[in-house]
Length: 416
Ligand code: D61
Ligand code: MG
Image (cartoon, rainbow, N blue to C red; front, side, top):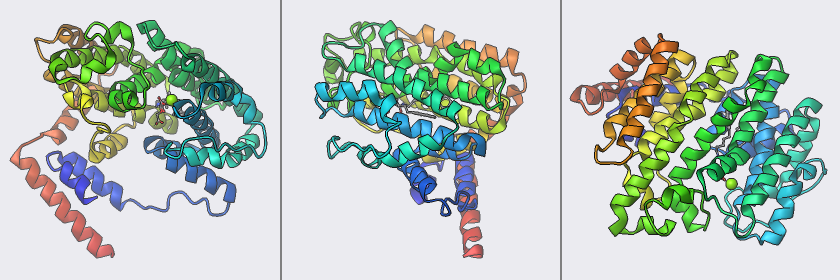
């Protein structure tokens, strides 16, 4: 907490958000009366930093179904990601995972000792038990998406098959993330929280996943390369280097930055669809659940843009304070549109005029701005309010932050 506050010292609204978050009642979720749910939510919290929070804030009708949707696919992804499993072993598991989730008692211990979510599969019997207790309509949606994702993963795991073209890149991201968007939209419509139209808009649902996945793939260049996974399409990196790993060489620093801005621009192509999707979502708990990952993605893209560190450091992340602030602010479409405008402007301001994608990125940012002005006029006032809280680097903000910290310390000692 102290280090998170320190990192946000020049962003007083983040300090405020951190303090509010810290002081908020902690015992919000109590699963102690139900041993199975306790195990399931334990695994959710172990395997996801960001999704655990938004899933647990969903209305009861959808919470367990989406928690299990997440855990099933995280299990599948833990097999996909593990480069220590032989392909002859891996591919059949990926292709049959949609049947495995109906086999009571099934567990999996073939992950390497360093696979981060290994334990989920070691105890996967509890996920299966939970899955089988869901309403059949939710089971069907989950099994269908699992089957399609598993087959897509199997295709791209096959020896000699790589993400070559931009069309491949869109296809791979459709399998691993776009399909999640399709399944979630079906659940929202099936439970009656949202109009049947939401499930019908498969294009927009797909973009919700693609924007998140492309942001991750852009950020994870070095980590994926280290483990011999390659998701940047050759059609993009091939314009800047002979081999993808050449981008990290210091002498290719300028080309690497150009390649990065190409990847950032490509991901930004999904932002219009994301706003259009979020505009459809009426249930407040569904809205926050959908909006928070998206605003975190645009904040991440902003952090990646022109940031050479992605070629030299793994695990670069937005500040904890920024995350907590975004989670607090993302509760209606005007505020989300304002956040999109705020980050689009920051991205544009950072752009280098000598970069080949300078104009492309400028146009993409301008389009976001225009759509928000036209469709979400309330975002203008929200943006002004957000900007008043950002005022990075001014001495005023340091004093404000110091005051908030002092306030928090005082509050804490009052209640202690
Ligand atoms: C609204 C709200 C959440 C949404 C959405 C719409 C549309 C799509 C998504 C979430 C999916 C976003 C995926 C982005 C994060 N990428 C990964 O986790 C990669 O694995 C992809 C395959 C497993 C997908 C698991 C998943 C994720 C989020 C969910 C969900 C299932 C079910 C319900 C709700 C949210 C990535 O993982 C790296 C890692 O191990 O962390 C990878 O292997 O590339
Ligand atoms: Mg994966």
